[in-house]
Length: 385
Image (cartoon, one colour):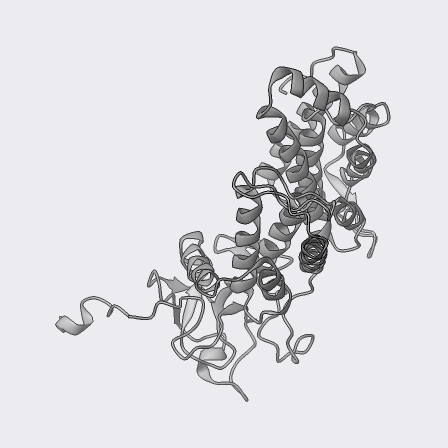
């Protein structure tokens, strides 16, 4: 029978959950089955038994986890509840420091902690959402709040323009980030490789492309660019050679379209009609819709799914005037075969590894095709849309 001291895990007074008790930042890690021993402490080896310091559950060896780089025996699993507590602690630290938008941009770009970067993006998005209207890309007009007037001082306007450029540049670089700096990265000694990490315990055949925390930073950076109206960065990222960047860019475009629909929903009927006329033929969405149509046949299934959702949102907000070239691409996406050819190796592989993702993709394409046919005046409805 266990002693009373062993009946329940001791409660810790450690509140900086994005750091270990020694003050080291927690960042994503992953280990391969052959990474054992020589030159590393037991806590940095594959066979070490790890337990989440928050939920007290065991962490499977081939799972990704949050840990420090100094060998401390302190870990956090990547379950949403535990990661949420870590992000909350990181956000509290930024709020306690009273970080401005410029300081948030520095944290996004320069912080050595991935949770701190993600929390800074959360605060930036929340600050933009709390404003009366989304941040404009015109530096002469700062964010409008009900209790704040637009300053007329040239020095203040210049400072606002500088801050906007700094924040936009930081979010753009976060969208294209390549992971954490690690002098062992690319060698067999790295503890941050993703090659041997799988999506979850029960799916040992679908490897992930990047850590969940890295993907969260990338996607939130794209959403922040949508709030900042930095549309040129999102349009360029759709053609990026890396699939994870293309997926985040598609999600950022979807957020841009939803913001326009949200702004239209808060106006009167006459204002909505006037805005609809202004949005009809919007150059950004009209141009990017063509690129999203090409992404429907992307090699990566996550990019295809994100492009379908972005197309549906862009067409639903009424900002696209002509869809003549888009309808054939949507119909071709529905007739796509279940096999695809890899551009790198030339090998044939399954187009969809995840049947659920395939079903959601087809549903989004059908809804987008129905809206496109209505815009063209065909009146065609797609079964199941």
